[in-house]
Amino acid sequence: MNNTYAVLGGGSWGTAIVKMLCENNNIVNWYIRSEEDVLFIKKKSRNSKYLQSVVFDKSKINPSSSIREIVAKSDIIILAIPSPFLDTELKKISDLLKDKILFSALKGVIPESHLIVSEHLNEFYKIPFSKIGIITGPCHAEEVALEKLSYLTVACKNIINGQEMANSLKSSYIKVKVSKDTMGVEYAAMLKNIYAIVAGICHGLGYGDNFQSVLISSCVREMKKFVYKIYKTNRDINDSEYLGDLLVTCYSSFSRNRTLGNMIGKGYTLKAAISEMSMISEGYYATKNAFELIENDFREFNIITSAYEILYQNSNPKATIKKLTNQLD
Image (cartoon, rainbow, N blue to C red; front, top):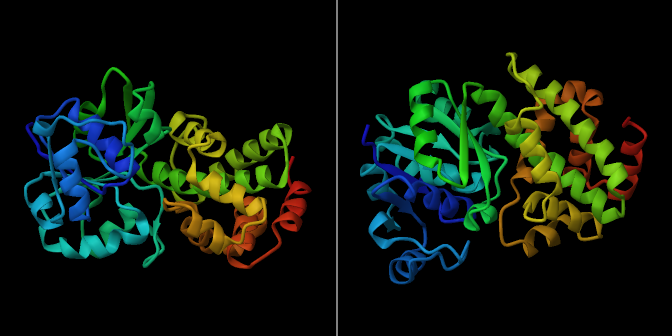
C-alpha cells in the first residue's frame, strides 16, 4: 500500500513521530497550529519549540497550519495533539474523517467526554474501532530525537493496518511490535501518567528509591486490576507496553507527569506547577477520569485515589502520601 500519512500536532511527540515516519516515507503531511512555526520549519528545517536538534529533509515534509488541507491529502491520520485541545481540532475536520484510518498517539483522556481517545472517536465521530489504532511506548520523544534505541507498540483491531503502521515507524533505532489489545494498551497509557505524578510527588517529598520500588510494584498490580475491570482479555501486564511504559514514565527526568508531581511534592500549588510547565501533563486530566471509573470501589485503588485527593480535593500531599504508605506492601 502507498498510503499517505498525516501527523496532527507540533509538540515534542508529534515532532518525534514525523521524524520516525520520514525514515520510511516519501512525504509526511504535518499539521501545526501556528503559521509562524510552520514558516520556521519551512525555512530552517527544524521545529523552533520542540526537539530543536532534529533536522528534517524538506523534501519529505509538508507542514501546514491548515488542518483541513493536511487531512484531505492523507489516508492515515496520527493524532498527536494534547488531549485538552483535541476535540476542538477534530470538529474542524469531522466531515473529512469518514474514510480515514486514525491512530492515536495521545496518552490521556478527552476532558469534554472523559473518554479515552478511541472511545471518543467512536462515540462522537462514528469512526469504527476497526479503523482506530494506538501508538504507545515505552518511548520518550527526546530519546527518539537522539536516535537512542527505543521500542514502540502499535495496537490495532485490524492487524493489517497495525502492521503497516509498524513498518512505517520502525528503523535502525526504533523497534515496533503489534498488539490487538487496543483498550488495554490505551488505558494503561492513561494510568501510567497518574502513577508518574504520584511517583513525582513522593520524590519531591523526599522519599527514596527503596520506597519508590514498593510504590511502583503496587502501581503495576493496581494497573492490572483496573485494566482487567475495564476490558477483560488475556494480557501480560509485564509486557513493555504496560510495565515498560509505566517504568519509564515514573522514573525518567523527561516525564512531564513525574515533573508535575515532583513540583507539587516540593510545595508548589497545582496552579503554579501547571503554569510553570511548558508542556501539558496528561495525568492531571486522566486522574479525574480514572477516579470516576472506580469511584464505587475506590478502596481497591489507593494510588489513584491518593492522586485524586491531592489534585482535585486539595488534600495535603504530605499527609495523603503518609496515609498511602500504610496501604502499600
